Image (cartoon, rainbow, N blue to C red; front, side, top):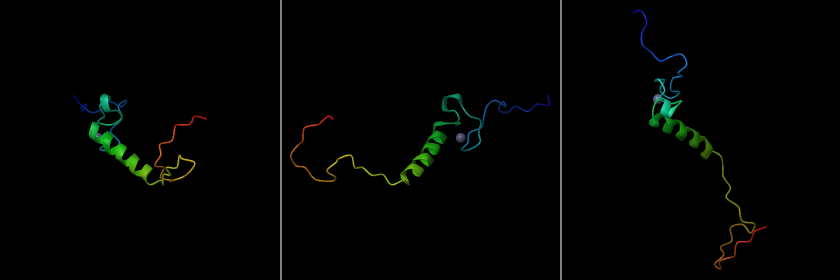
Length: 71
Ligand SMILES: [Zn+2]
């Protein structure tokens, strides 16, 4: 009677809003919070300058389609 119902000690709260996490979205309480966390992560990732330079020739506009060379 003196025990208040709350999240079990084994269940960690949502790191976003501190609500009890749901097994489906662990460790988050909902898909929304998972999305928020993902967005934060992506925002940090976007801060890093990405160089898309897979081509050896660089950014040379090749009008003629080159056959894919493997090794
Ligand atoms: Zn949450």
